[in-house]
Length: 297
Image: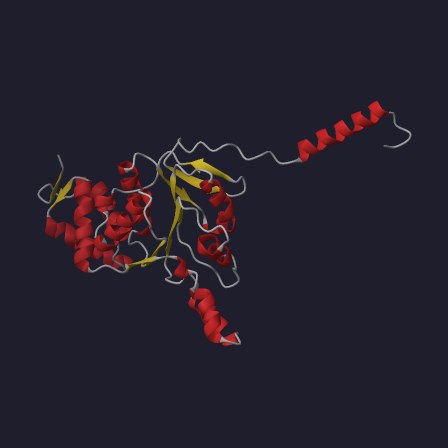
């Protein structure tokens, strides 16, 4: 204690310093009400889960041309929800073929079957390094099950955060929480650009070891579910299914001819293109001659 300050003045000074430090310290993260919603978004800067009041999803019956892939992911999700062994899943391949839609639809289906105990948490690609904090929160809620979902996951040439993801999924000392599973979608099977992998191989002392380092991230996913460009028959089946969803009764030959033309102008056939075509057709059907189409009941 300084010699020139009485005891009471010195104590008051310490209290003022402590009070100032408390004001400067960041507030603790607010408590998480995980019963408020079935889906959340991870807010990495605030270290909290933001509830999603209305999830942007389509009914699983509308996902056509991916029947086998759909069944595999649903079964994996059901096993996880029941506490049985299940795998992290990487949904990779052609754009617009329903990768993220399948994840959200599978969660919705299984969550209804399990009474709302299965939560979907979306983590943005740029927040992957904060995954360990999210895992700590998940581990502290053992009565719930969590699908952590990252849409369009990929890494650029100078990005090393993929190493954090590798360690968080399987390699860390704590391991992945038993009540968490990780689903990701990507256009790349190995999540890394080919030129990045080839550059590593050309500059490494041991090229094979460099490639193993990059490919080992994909190995953390026990399920690799491929999505490929659909055939014309599958594309037209998607169009038919979406048209029934809108209860839009169009003469099949007329609708299919327009659908083929639409896909040709877009330069691709996919579920997304089929959905866009039928939305456009649903708006235009009133201007189509009545002998061609009619509204559904």
